Image (tube, rainbow over all chains, first blue to last red; front, side):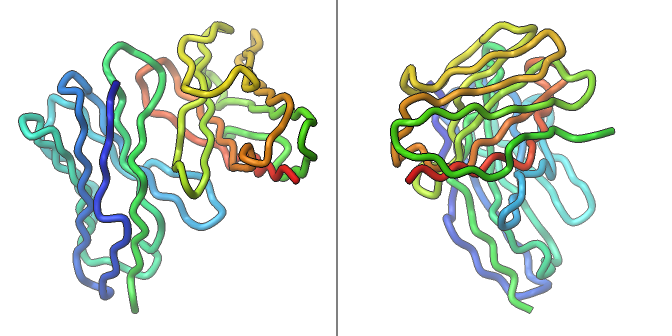
Length: 113
Length: 112
């Protein structure tokens, strides 16, 4: 089955710096890759997603890039702010309309003011 | 539009008891899935329902079960609770299978 690896597990940056989180997956037929942000005690919230027919997607300070050949996708946050501090999860929707997402282990991002 | 609603939000149970958690999806959403979140194992898929049918099940023992009603609301049940079942149980809904999923706030279960 699909396997998702997420790195790094923790990331500390200064306010205003950029942050990059990378995920690799195993099934080349997977075609949907969302990113979720989870603040302490809150629900995971979708922040951006990308489908396999697109190489990059941007939404203000957040972008996601997908390299299908290498089977990895990355979350890029520019001009980080303290409110970006949270746990970020990547996920992969495996092929076959399974109705499930396979999640990475999460990255704890700390943005220092 | 109201989001995914889960009840109860917090509960404490004793080993050996059973628990039922409830989820109301976003209006119009027909697919409901459940996830278990623990510090050690992260977010793990439990099962997914669409039109009252369980379409997929994760790698959990048979003590974990669920169902979906005709109005798309869903329940999950855990019988013979173990300490290791302590977790945040998240329900998520989507319009159709394969669409974006949206999570509820979760039900925090503590087994003592």
